[in-house]
Length: 464
Ligand SMILES: Cc1cc2nc3c(=O)[nH]c(=O)nc-3n(C[C@H](O)[C@H](O)[C@H](O)COP(=O)(O)OP(=O)(O)OC[C@H]3O[C@@H](n4cnc5c(N)ncnc54)[C@H](O)[C@@H]3O)c2cc1C
Image 1 (cartoon, rainbow, N blue to C red):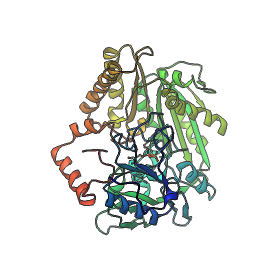
Image 2 (image 1 turned 90 degrees about the horizontal axis):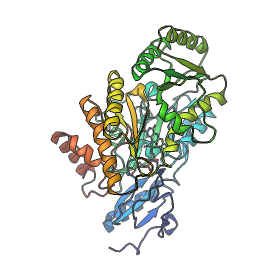
Image 3 (image 1 turned 180 degrees about the vertical axis):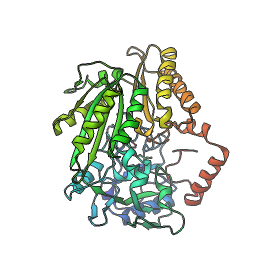
Image 4 (image 1 turned 90 degrees about the vertical axis):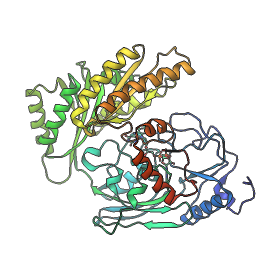
């Protein structure tokens, strides 16, 4: 296969790809893939040229955003024959419309940069996650990202008004509408949400905006059990006039791990098996402080909460959020381990946590189990880390697989999902294929072959 003779603009290509670069190494630091070259287009026209070139040369395409996805979806195949297309240079905010509460932004815009740009207009884009400083809007679309505000604002799927996509044959689908209501046939944009780069390259999106909150109340509450945390969640929804925007559970063991990171401490003196990070926010003339005060009084009276602290400044709120973010950041220092991203109906969350923790305590008693997650969406991350002295290799991989089987068994039994937000990528493909019905697989393959008949877009991601 000839990939040196090219009609492409050489200034968008990196032919000698550094294996230590972020194109090859994902957020966890693991290196994967062996792309024929990396392309960094600057415009839709350059993406089109590239896609046509790849079609001519029989090259597959792996789109890449911030490379923070946790399921090996944006890594080129190790055996080569792939072109990695990084959207990082297509990062412009094309237009903000404050009256329509919408923004049109290119796919390579980093999520945090988008936050800052719309905040300057007194607006808010509510999708927010730990990787916000690196992940890109295109990656958020392609993974249908969730994060900390889903319970109030929904996932990326609920926040996208329109998309611009370069299709596998080089045609551009301009679906960049900014309408709240549009029932003209199939909602094509939704096909690309969660498609993980397998149907086309997202080059831009129009997104919903919201008024920027003028009051935010952040608290860190100790609870005696997962079941009390879920009772507290139901009470918060009712007592906080639907202004609840985040409800995160963090187990004591997870807080302990986070505390190994610089400047992170537990603001509560009382030890507890679990903690809840709760945030409510409002814009306009509403007494959120009084509302939250009433809710906390009720929660204490009903003995849902053992102890708690309410942030009295932005810095204190940031310190509370740093605990949640520290749980994730501290993990990657511990060699290979199991990360899961599962969901069950909210009413089954407590049962799921209790059963998974009990089953893991029996099966992999020598490991460290961390439980945390967006439990207001029924979404938990169970992380299982092998003992520190267990060497990398087949035994460690088997140990990790055994832990995963324990978790997935409970999740399946409770009617849950093995991937609540990270997607399938390559890491979860066999687990997904095992669970998908024949009809589901048939529909997926029909869609894929209709849009990408030559299987050129991110082959091997989601399903074979
Ligand atoms: C610390 C941390 C916290 C996280 N927290 C959350 C969380 O709370 N919620 C959550 O949902 N996820 C979370 N994630 C996972 C990850 O950040 C998200 O999946 C994010 O949306 C990925 O964006 P990215 O730009 O890094 O995409 P990448 O990792 O680069 O790519 C992900 C997938 O999207 C495809 N893709 C990327 N860009 C495009 C494009 N322009 N067109 C077509 N396909 C494309 C890739 O091929 C790949 O399949 C977290 C990750 C980390 C490291």
